[in-house]
Image (cartoon, rainbow, N blue to C red):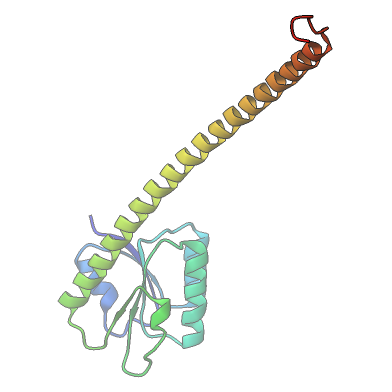
Length: 172
């Protein structure tokens, strides 16, 4: 099954139709209010695609995306009039890229994202396990420290009592 994606911006190149024709589930959000509404409805896309839009709205959509579903890659379809913003995106598709090429790039980006998410889950689970083991060891160390302190106090009492004993005549 193809991925679920959210498309933001003006779809002048019919990319939404192309995506749907190859099996993607596309939530088309031409405006920032549509993006906000989609996230409020609990939509969790596997990728967010950005087409032609004003830079301010695009920036706001990126912020919304990162705060709502930070795991999804951000993919930008660059247009001839508005280049830039590449650091905010996981993939930037240059103008005039053929549908076959950009579909392959989108699929590969989503797949990499899935792999990274799976690795992240494994790392978090390993970290949780190590944290729990560390807490158990800390408690065991604390218990051993208390036990050692009790034994030291007993030994100190024995030494004090021993020093109080009269010395035998053989030792003098």
